[in-house]
Amino acid sequence: MRNALDILKERGFFKQCTDEEGLRKKFDEGQVTFYAGFDPTGPSLHIGHLVPVYAMAHLQKAGHKPICLMGGGTARIGDPSGKTEMRKMISYEEIGRNIEGQKPQLAKLIDFEGSDAILANNADWLADLNYIDFLRDIGRHFSVNRMLTFEAYKQRLERGLSFIEFNYQLLQSYDFLELNRRFGCTLQIGGDDQWGNIVAGMELIRRMEDGVESFGLTFPLIARSDGKKMGKTEKGAVFLNPEMTSVYDFYQYWRNVPDADVEKFFLTFTFLPVEECKELGAAKDQAINESKERLAYEVTKLLHGEEEAEKARAAAKAAFSGGAGGDKEGMPSCEMSAADFEQGINVLDLFASTELCASKSEARRLVSQNGAAVNGEKFSDVDGLINASHVQEGEIILKAGKKRFFRIIVK
RNA sequence: GGGGAGGUUCCCGAGCGGUCAAAGGGGGCAGACUGUAAAUCUGUUGCUUCGGCUUCGAAGGUUCGAAUCCUUCUCUCCCCA
Image (cartoon, rainbow, N blue to C red; front, side):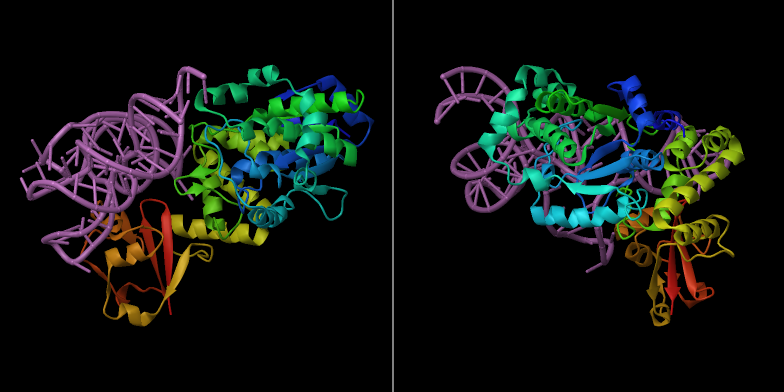
């Protein structure tokens, strides 16, 4: 079997490693237990959280043992790495709900059922820590001088850093130590912003466990070539929970990715062979456009299942190829009664009642700027009415701009 | 605890008694161009029954009139202890 390190490298999951040769050897020798941390500060993971999950999936496929560490304890504090603001504190109760929400999402990519993968929660050992004991046993191994040299803290020193956040590194290091003791975990992986915390954890293990060796590996932070934040849209993050981000929107996110990112996204977010990813990403013009359709389908299939992916693809095709034919099932929609259309409904009111427009003013703008369409026909009369004559085959398709569709099912 | 600087529309940031729904930039939306890409250009960007209505940390007050002045409260940042 190929060394897991090579797999990560060729798919773009490798930024730096504390001891590459040592880790390579370790991977060759047998199963390595590794972990990555997740912050249950929200009810659902979003696309931006996925990189570590994919990396874990690759390592698991290569025969290694993953531990997903939910930061049930640390979520109450907030990691200062890469952030300029202190995070809101949330209750244990909310954290518990968040963990329940995220678990099945992790399971889409990581196999918990038929394997020895572990889902841990650091609240188990952090929640009841004794402050004095912790300072004595753990705190004494940390040098403030040293911590202040870490990039994550340096930046925050200018903006302000609370003592609580300053302690994050100790807690994360302690996590690594605990996982090492409990499960023999010897490798921590994470985004490159975690480098400092990972290294600190390794050092703690070395000191407290009498020279036990551990490793750290980080992946590059995945950014979009257009500078937009990964997984963020105008509407906000693209979540994995279909109630927060519809499968259709999820699909559309990948469908609309910049050309320059296609190869990278295939490598990172699908399990297609490397060669194929490169080919798909190297395509030009119409061909790369088709690559994006494939990308959207593959990623949607992985995270929402084949059936949902088919629906989203069919809905997108139906919407973009002129409206006729195709399955519109996956398109955002609502139901209205036929009686509502007898008198006719003002276009502005209708658009404003859907997710296409947030207010009537916005609808007015849209219509007067010639951005609205009904059943594929431009509709620019602000005072126009939508009535029964617009109902075609029991539905009305509204369109805002070039690619936002909404389907009204008339009963 | 003492002193100072501030909180403006999605974000940054002007405004400092009327001409302010509030400059400018970013972002967003729409149009043109395209490939459901990028870049570019143009328009637009509080809500509205189009009469008005609600916004400038919160509550009061002064004024014909306040984002702009006064009082109290609150939050943030900085300096000193």
